Length: 187
Image 1 (cartoon, rainbow, N blue to C red):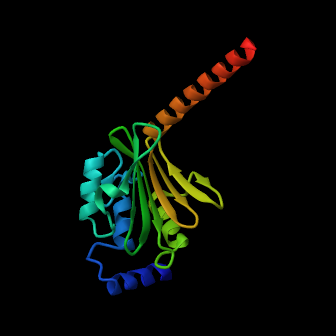
Image 2 (tube, rainbow, N blue to C red):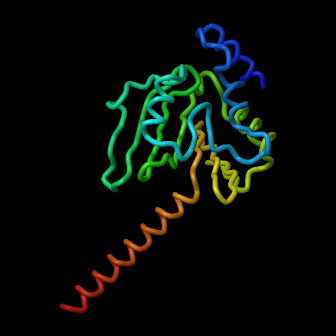
Image 3 (spheres, rainbow, N blue to C red):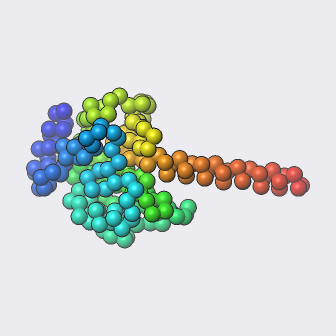
């Protein structure tokens, strides 16, 4: 907690507005029901690309530069927004499937906040992680996965969309295997 207090002191010297910083970010993780969070500040899983662009532009934790931070991936209809952060967030990644945000990942600035403080805060709010390894801690329910990865990245994943993509991927692999076998059989 000493590191968290130091980070809060750094907040004052970096000119952050009230409600910004690790304490505010930690408050945004929880909701009244104690369920896993699907939102960080004004950014939530399931929002549209246009809603995300507006939220990033209005949030003082991000250095969002508009459409030049948006990329379209080879696997349509996916797109990715990558932007730098200010203070506690070093980089942020937002991945879309179709029209909905399904992954958001925040790489933290380890000079200002440490893994232990974030792990402790998440454990106090959500209990022990369901999966714990030296590389990551995972809290998951049927709809959301919250992962804390080393050295210090926090990910929010919409599991329904993610599992759907995995299912589609498995179908594609099966088709490729069948085509391969048909080709070999034709030799």
